[in-house]
Length: 89
Image (cartoon, rainbow, N blue to C red):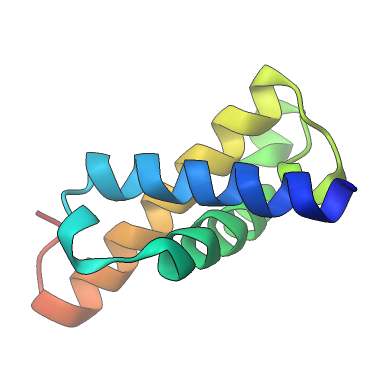
């Protein structure tokens, strides 16, 4: 059951991050899920120690973990945009 919640929350976070970074028109549902999950991993590696919380990948569904996962997804999209276009928009 946690796996399904993980996919749904990852998809929502990826979708919100793609809206913030203005890449929503280029992404579909599958890519939003991937961005949300990989962004949560990136956020857990970079930001979780700073905020003292976990991520959605660690089965921690608190407000802090959602924020860290969301910021990780934004960072991931900024890196992808930087590599793809040479700008983060």
